[in-house]
Length: 640
Ligand SMILES: *[C@@H]1O[C@H](CO)[C@@H](O)[C@H](O)[C@H]1NC(C)=O
Ligand SMILES: *[C@@H]1O[C@H](CO)[C@@H](O)[C@H](O)[C@H]1NC(C)=O
Ligand SMILES: *[C@@H]1O[C@H](CO)[C@@H](O)[C@H](O)[C@H]1NC(C)=O
Ligand SMILES: *[C@@H]1O[C@H](CO)[C@@H](O)[C@H](O)[C@H]1NC(C)=O
Ligand SMILES: *[C@@H]1O[C@H](CO)[C@@H](O)[C@H](O)[C@H]1NC(C)=O
Ligand SMILES: *[C@@H]1O[C@H](CO)[C@@H](O)[C@H](O)[C@H]1NC(C)=O
Ligand SMILES: *[C@@H]1O[C@H](CO)[C@@H](O)[C@H](O)[C@H]1NC(C)=O
Ligand SMILES: *[C@@H]1O[C@H](CO)[C@@H](O)[C@H](O)[C@H]1NC(C)=O
Ligand SMILES: *[C@@H]1O[C@H](CO)[C@@H](O)[C@H](O)[C@H]1NC(C)=O
Image (cartoon, rainbow, N blue to C red):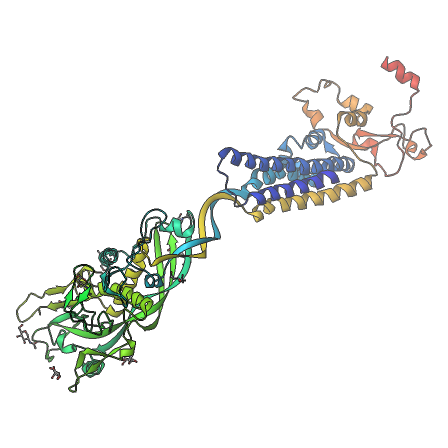
């Protein structure tokens, strides 16, 4: 009993450990999958056999006690002997009421296979498991410093034969780089940058441009992943100066080239941008620039090729508040609804970006935070005495960027300037709104490329609310779109740990489900085991239910009498015999006194099934002798 119980526990543990080792494991081969599942079922089956064996042993022990205590009909006795194969005893009122304990034990026996064989394998299922991990991979990042050391004379050939492309094109004072004091000076943005900037501006999607295999490359395989990079790149720092027409004074102080009187409702413009004041000149002012690399000759000014200032973007726009104008409004003549003018300025800054990429399936999202470091060219314009700005006189001169002194910084600023040029190209110009009254209709007259970007409303073609943020965002999108062209010099690689996730079809093991099946089984079997052990101790002997035990416990002449006419064991059995009540006890052979004689070796009555009236109880420790001893000779003679 104890061995089968302990074996059952070990088998259950075996199933648990097998399932645990399978948890979150993916098998590609269906064969292998089926095999490991079958191993689990085999353990569940063996477990049932072990626990069942323990319960059966206890049950057998216990039914004899029941036979001793109660007179039961032969029908019921049959059912109790057959309980392991035939569940009909649960429908018999006599077994339930008179043999309650053994019926309950039989019930446990019948329920064990449901819990172990049927239910416990359900703890192992198959499903999608989100596997989290990290990969150390080289993710693309931006390094504008690489532009600092690029010389257009030297091609940077990559292992695959392609060349690294710069963001800028250059002119020079000496094509061969031999004349003492030669230098290169900035000419214009490169064709590669132009393509990316145009595509980024035309792109109306929420994603920036990227290469098709970006997720695979950046995540180090077919994973979803997130990671954050930081890099230094140019950015526009936009600040709203005027909100409504009362801020004109502020605009004059800040040196704005226009004020809100140029904007609807006072003016005609619903959008107005001045983005070129103080721009780098192209061509540079020299008497003659050769066609071969722009080599200057004749008169060359001292500030040839200098970045003296970087244009500040001044942008005004008006938004339709959709609130009708009161009747006494001065604008009532031309406008039906109130328009709110805004003016903001954007300064080109060197900016520290921190970008979190989240690649998820076919899409990716970016979350950008930026910290503005310092203006790309840190100069301001002086003013005339009457207060207007003198765009020809930036200062201080110490902050000018010269092509022959700090060459790395000059080249980097040239790359920043080239990026900014393409944003300015889209913002430049104006948009007029024809008023709805006195003669309609109202429509926008567009003199700007801003309408091809996502900065305008898709319903009215007018600039969207919150334009300063959106201008910054458009520029950030352009910069992030550089990642779509890995051949660019500025696109470099940085090794880092990326957080990966991946859905895998794996085994899923839920341990509580397994133990929800086994804990009750173990508990009840343990209780039954204790009960069985206690019964053995009380009885002082063990019992079985084999044929031999039936044979020796039915040696009773009364039974011979009763069963006359039914010696074949045939079915159906005579009904009146089935209903006879029998009990197990000490047979009072030849009178009561025999039982108490207790003479060593001579036999003191024997135990057998019989009708209750001829039986007395069995006592522990009494030496029952069996049938009155016959001589060996008689037995031998009978056998022969
Ligand atoms: C950027 O590139 C320069 C020149 O190639 C290199 O010296 C520098 O270490 C790089 N910076 C980063 C952050 O990789
Ligand atoms: C560079 O040289 C070309 C050819 O002479 C000229 O057209 C261009 O304007 C020059 N660029 C600058 C910035 O002067
Ligand atoms: C302003 O918005 C209102 C409400 O949407 C609209 O009826 C009106 O036509 C708009 N005004 C102009 C000039 O577009
Ligand atoms: C209203 O529009 C008319 C015709 O376009 C123009 O002459 C007039 O100045 C405008 N009035 C105001 C107050 O803007
Ligand atoms: C990444 O994006 C997916 C889908 O948009 C989202 O479910 C997930 O939470 C994001 N991960 C992080 C770390 O933000
Ligand atoms: C330029 O003007 C701004 C704002 O007026 C000021 O913060 C900044 O220090 C000035 N820069 C220089 C180089 O004077
Ligand atoms: C301010 O003075 C400059 C130079 O003296 C002149 O060119 C400009 O037109 C003047 N502006 C105004 C508004 O008077
Ligand atoms: C138009 O813009 C609105 C607001 O930005 C957006 O919700 C909508 O999806 C856009 N419609 C189309 C067709 O792009
Ligand atoms: C990545 O995430 C998407 C959306 O959550 C999901 O459909 C896809 O299966 C995931 N890819 C991998 C490799 O796990």
